[in-house]
Length: 113
Length: 111
Image (cartoon, rainbow over all chains, first blue to last red; front, side):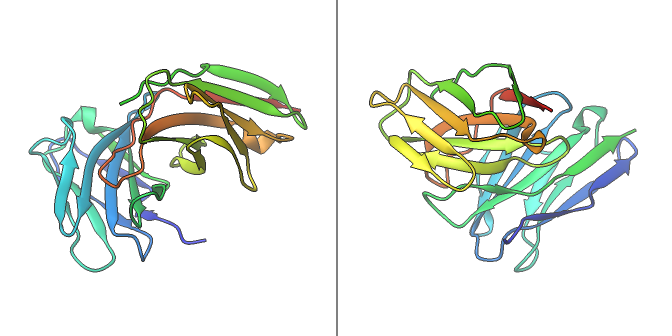
């Protein structure tokens, strides 16, 4: 069964540094999402992306965050100048379209020191 | 968005049937009910989705009464590997409808 893959599985970064989290959505999917889950808390929506532009974003997704689909397969989340509170699991998800469930990757654990 | 309420935790034993009920009194006409499963350090995994009556797949069944104000996820003959958090989500099945996760139900299956 096709899967959403995310790399790296664990990223450790110093506070203030930039990080890029990578995702390869399922190949025929057209809609992409990033969510995050702080340890012990709920899964929270960050941003959705379609046709090379952001469709919707949450209050969490401020100016330090950006997303990009640099080629036909990758979907990235960049966090500029990371903060301690950015430490969380970051999940990428994708769906082929309406009436289809979102499929999630297994996430990248981001640890900010 | 319709608010959902589910038990915080449930305990079961291997081989038993487990039913997790979710309340969604304010469900809208266009809303569907979707259940996800999440293991520690993994992403949520889609289990089942429905609009009304009963839906069954190879993993679970979903029962939705006529008023759609609640739904029940039924897991037949659970095993230890079914220990996970189960989330009930309610919303439109359109790509612009982002998923809103609650705290879910932590199911613990014991030998």
